Image (cartoon, rainbow, N blue to C red):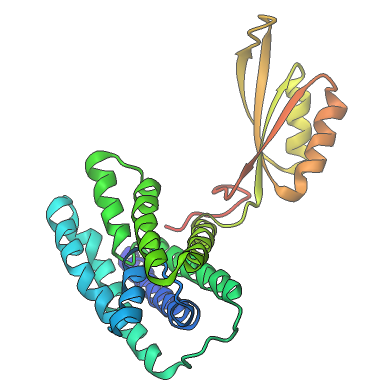
Length: 290
């Protein structure tokens, strides 16, 4: 019973996140993109261009263009219905929200600076996309096509999205002019960065690999003074052919200086490599959501 309640709460939270994603994405398109003829990539970009050319409703066009794409996903993917069910929810709400906002929000943007609109529109689009992905859904369109191509033929999603969005932005250059297309490319780039940030979070951890001849002393000091766990394995230096010990430890970003001081003080001849990570799950770090 507890598991059912937990799953139910998780599902409710995910649908609330998807709804929030739709509101943020719609606001970005109506307030920042459409007034300055900035066509975001994918189906949304096509809808913005058609709105400019023949004054069609943006939300309705997005929904109509997605119908054949979602049918294709249902037929070609083994778990097609599960893939598109949440996407359909997002699409319906997104289409309605876009057209409702277009009626009640001011037709003029909050700023006359096209660059600022491209920046803020791209960031909002990335945040909305990241929230949708974290909730198990997408905004459809080229995202759904990318899932199909990745699962069927192993094509990376990033490559698929790059190709399709490039075609849309190229069309935007013909419709609005190449300066507008350049702003669209900027918005697309910022959208990708914001989506990655939403999915992976800020880079708050560091991973350290330590090669030392004093593994017990170094690991003991790290565990005692920093309270961090250490993993060790045996290795062989290929140049010297000598046996060495490799230590692996994960610390927070603020603990890097202390770790470096501990290692170099105990074993000045050690070799220390510090890498960058986003999130760690487990003891002393983030607890995974069950």
